[in-house]
Length: 345
Ligand SMILES: NC(=O)c1ccc[n+]([C@@H]2O[C@H](COP(=O)([O-])OP(=O)(O)OC[C@H]3O[C@@H](n4cnc5c(N)ncnc54)[C@H](O)[C@@H]3O)[C@@H](O)[C@H]2O)c1
Image (cartoon, rainbow, N blue to C red; front, side, top):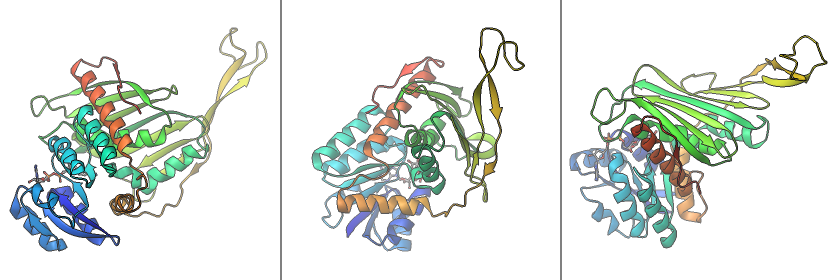
């Protein structure tokens, strides 16, 4: 068994607390919040001791693993403090708000022999697991490009912009699907509600393999959309997280080059000896067994703490996503200039 604690008794902390309390391989010991009343209220619901300071849990030998669900700007400092105390940590997205903090956490975790895991929840969702299997098995062919939309009206945050808040989901999904590092990025967007905090961002990532991905995130949009499309050389797939019965659709559609004889119909001009034919195919809707991703995520964290194995969401994936976000933020500040991704280990 692992003794766990949660820092942050807010909106997302309540979901984490429910899953920590329900996990069979750990005991949920304590909840910390700088607002002690919030810690008390959640602690009462899930049988965990309320605390007002982080030091209280870091001095408690019954606690070996900590989950951080506080505002983004606190993640770097709290994460480093926890791993430095020899405890395992799972940090909600964004893992950190800059690459240096993410690196410091991952390096200290390696020194201490503990787990530092980013809260990349979507890697535990059945549709993303299914998509990864499609890519890894070769069924999709070579992944050529992907794009995502994560749009809604709210929740508008003041601790970080819409990109740092929402895009970690998309970037972690792309990172999980493309077996190739993102090497450069561009981003542009719009800031309307609060000074210096973008409400909408359009980003692009270029991968070493030649693949590309685009994301569009916004908390100022009339519709709730959460979709990812991946186009492969053999098949194409659409993941619609909002749909209740068609979360994943596989299109057996592709473009193929057909050799054409001189002068035949279909040749674009004399310079080409082939023409592109599009082949729209059937659409499959796989039956997926949906399970709460957060429950799987917490169990993977606990398992990694107990057995020393790598969780699905590795510290290195946290580092890669932080590095991509830092590069994207720099592009956003410079009106969409191309920025190199520094760390794609
Ligand atoms: N994985 C997901 O799908 C998902 C969904 C929503 C939110 N989140 C993440 O969870 C984190 C928390 O988001 P939220 O919506 O719950 O925020 P929130 O504002 O509702 O709650 C944050 C809580 O942290 C407390 N807090 C702030 N600073 C603290 C500190 N230094 N020490 C102790 N407590 C502190 C606040 O009092 C508050 O109760 C964010 O990083 C967010 O991105 C993840």
